Length: 318
Image 1: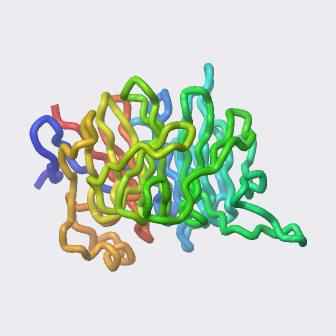
Image 2: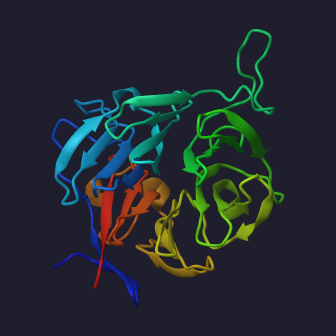
């Protein structure tokens, strides 16, 4: 039998699970982030499995899935959010480390440009008289604006979004824990949406089971309530892909209406299944998608929050 097919109409994909020739000395932990560079190389960011000989948390593949390189042993156990951005003639990676509570900007080969640690210049985040942080801070993902500003979602900490300029200088904080408009509960992923005339910051307000839109200055604009547990976003030709932890990948159209849900497992068994060995995973069904990106051809790469890691390529059908 061939690979499963998911989707409908002009949005149909062949499901290729366990994509990429992973070296035997690397064992995936939770596969959290994925992106593509301008050369078509695919970057997978994971936590590293306890049985892995290599502690490298970043694995790089060529477009055909051949292993190219790995690096980032400092991120073992904490590899989480991953974002790539073109800045002038060079591309840079932005990585969130949930173990060390850091955001690190690097080159494509892992050379550090700068690190953002505890946001002590942010009003909600203060230190006590002994210099210790008072507010819980665990950044989960990152987005960049056209002007170079950086938005960091404190998803596992105190549910604020911290904004920085292109040099890493603090600008403002907004959000904070709650359910009211403008408040957030686990701002897990972010994307600056440039599909319209004015850029909009989309935030995966996962704990509130919704997407929330803000101006780039942090003012609430509205909600997009079309997902269950949205984790992150990526955009290609007006279509937004959303990895949803509740066992599905959602596609939104230009107006943020659902086009289709891909690989949805409606059994509700994902919390248990994510702990199981790979052979328990159902072909054509997702367990708990955590990161997703389009490549330059419109294919979709999905990585999942499962203990043994899983990278799936959704090959777009002609």
